[in-house]
Image (cartoon, rainbow, N blue to C red; front, side):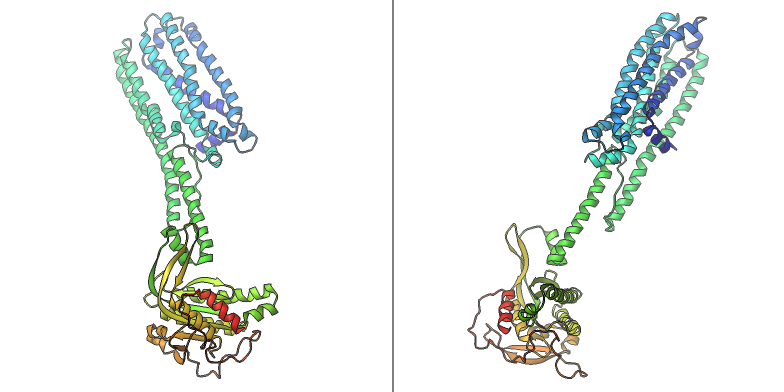
Amino acid sequence: MIAKLVVWALRAHWGLSAVVITANFSGLAVIVTGLWLSGFFGRLGEDWMRTMALIGIYPAVGLLAGVGLAMRDRGRYFGWLDQTRKPTPEEARRLLRLPIAITVRALALWIPGVIVVTATFTHLTEIDSPAVTAALFTLGALQSAAVTFLIVDRLIRPTIPVVSAVLDDTMLWSSSVLVRVIVTWAVAGAMPLAMLIVVLADPATPAADRIPTAIYLSAVGIGVGALATAILARAVASPMRTLRLALDLISRGETDVRVPVGSSSEIGRLEHSVNELAANLRERERMRDVFGRHVGAQVADRALTGGMDLTGDVRVVSALFVDVTGSVALSTGLPPQEFVAKLNRLLSIVVAATEENDGLVNKFEGDAALCIFGAPIALRDNATPALRAARRIRDEVTESGELDIGIGVARGLVFAGDVGTDTRLEFTVIGDAVNEAARLTAEAKEAPRRILVSGTVIDAAAPHEREKWTLLDNILLRGMQEPTACWTDAEPAAAQGAPEPAADSADDRTLPTRNPFAEAPDDQSPVSAMTEIRSTASESD
């Protein structure tokens, strides 16, 4: 009901004038009640009508002036609302100052009236206390101003969401919770007690009227105080409940939350802050998603939580390389879009198999991919998931029949961390295990099962996984001093021969089973694993 009245007063052209009239009548009610309880009307004599007419001149003029100014303020403060547009920043700030501006003006109109009416009463009545009369009319002025502030503050509340969209900060000291509580207490609690003090302080008040006056004003104070307290508590509790529900949703990871900003107090600022929190979390999740698509979710989480410092450690990992056989000839014979589509389908298999086995696809380079098991998140057993991923990638690529690949898996001590500068970082792994996996990949392209795994990986794997692998040969890898024991997965008993290369592979030659680089010069210097794959692939093509 109150909300409907507020919306009606906000839209009506004379709604602000109605607020002013209501507030002035509340002040008048306080004055009349005080004069009646003090027995003042009985002391006016036979010429009371002329006295009241003279006294009412200034209040009538002041009321008309207040209504006229309110009509002018309607266009000044709510013109943008009538034009169905958003307010400018200046109009928004001016609107927030409306309650205190109209309240100050109401006091400015009432104070001369208090002086004039007190002087008139003193002159026209024989038995009168100027202090009591001035006190009663001052209470009426304060009541009118306080009610004006509370009503106008409530009146502009539906516009706060629009204002908050224009201004980042809608909080104003005059509309703070503290000010509202004090004004509400003054209207509902302090005013009846102040009236009681003034009436009892009037020496002309009959003794028989003092007790009923005290009972009456006490009852009014209790009733009005309870009602005002309930309204104020609801005004604070309702948005706080909304904020609690919003924060509960955010704490559960639901960041698509927005709380309507409905106040220019600390509560409104808190609502705005919750919206900013949700927006920042949404942006953080968006960045995490975009960042994770480029570097992997694990690396993205590590970077977002660990800052931008160059960090890393040395640990034992299993490195898995995947490279396409005959990629140069294949890319030459296909349109670029078709070749890229084939690569994307291959890499989607690699990503799914790696991530579902707790690994990280560290980087793509052309038609090759480097996958790491055991970094940046350490695994109790990183060999077994690497072997599972290798078999799954080979099986799914073979089933698709689009490409022929080689897969190499090695295990060893590497540096896993960030390399680069303060302005550009990249998470990578550097070590012999990475280089060994790259060279195993080149050899795996010639192996019947298209997978070669170093013996260190087999030794570290779980027994149930180790049973699925068999020793293929001891191969002297490029740059190595000693031959490497190369294992491949055992062919199922029902299978006959090695899997055929993909039908559309550009390289269908019979490949030698020995290392083509066996006679190459020994090279023990650290090399980029991706560069190793590229050079090896170029030579094999």
